[in-house]
Image 1: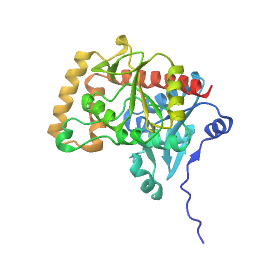
Image 2 (image 1 turned 90 degrees about the vertical axis):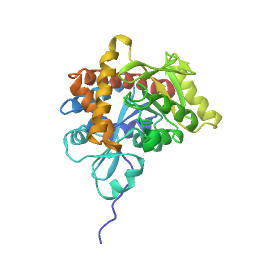
Image 3 (image 1 turned 135 degrees about the vertical axis):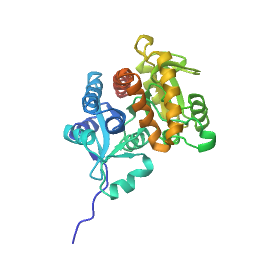
Image 4 (image 1 turned 60 degrees about the vertical axis):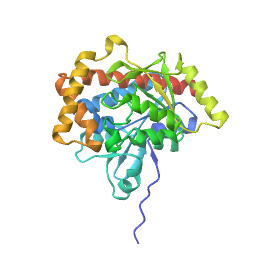
Length: 307
């Protein structure tokens, strides 16, 4: 008689030891590895992201699915597989059970990574940019599951705002409606992913990882707000993509979307690939700076929260 397959979360050795010892851990997504960056840069950058977390004193836990098993803390062989294999699925929260049942390989989005990390007891997550409300959403109802997932998931997400290809203002309105806390890291302006300033104000700013850790502790002890805390960490002005180049590239990319009828999950990778091509790789360099800075800050927050 064949044994039924197991679908529980599997932990990498380093993460399992850190959970046992109470050491700080930072969750990392795998979609940036499989779908967000071109090969072969994706694997190199994935390793650099993990190194940035370690450099801040925390343990990296890159999350993904290999052969139907959810793994928190992919080892280097698993990371290499998701970076180089064809047909790796892009997994949001709703996809996880079916993908597991079918034995799929999958990369977790911000939503799925947040949910899995919280289930694993990990309280801090670093990514590049959040998903959000898409342009023309009033007709298409196209909104990332990142937003509703963060409304019910108690995790701190360090990011450079939402991807600038989205409707930033509408996304901030939805986050307010959903009760998701948003703070700027040393800024009162919401960052615009590739650019430092999206043009929108924030109500709250924090100055240190210790203040963020205190906010996480207050949320836990109050027991009132059960959703996420977004830490918006802008690039320094001298490290951003040239704003004029950004605006021109975005306008061209949106026109191409409409021309080619690209919709749904395909929109973000399509536009990011267009940015990479149209800016001759400059947007990729900015994207890498974003995630490395966010990984380092997330590591410092995790260390402060564990103190």
